[in-house]
Image (cartoon, rainbow, N blue to C red; front, top):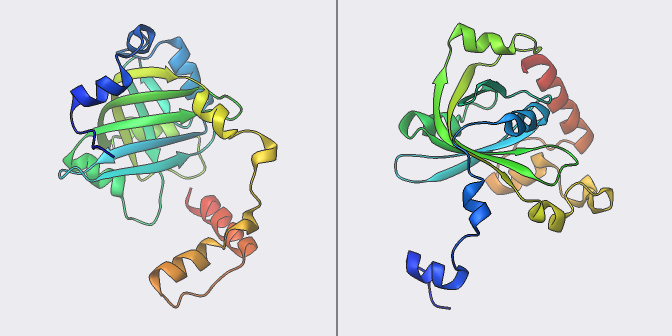
Length: 206
């Protein structure tokens, strides 16, 4: 198959974008974007290091866990984890990030692109004082682009449909998969034990 390696070749296949697809791209958050963020308990954030290596990380908490400061600024808590800090490390070297917000039951998504910085500013950290455990840092993002993404991907995947749910036992436990991948001698746990561990970790560490 011929490689598509120029913008001209790409556009020859796909043509120009629809006018509305270009026009819907906002430079700041309007009321609809803000409401979407307020309802979203889950988002993914993409980043890249100085050499272009890409990364994407899931983030979740209660609805509205990412705060809107103003029309151009959102703040996301960074909770304690395994200290890989891939996203944070990338932001230090390359602050450009992209985000995708999900609201359960809603097939549309919200996309945001912007410039991020990591902060321990008490004022920003105080935005999360109502949560059981304080974040370690806050990720402040200056919005450069924001737009709603159509429902087709989630409709095709039937992501929110109960009949498409996969029984957890279809896959091995996380511990079993990582043990196989790393050839480590970590003890295997049942799914119930793993679920209990992560639930306790959330309760204890946030």
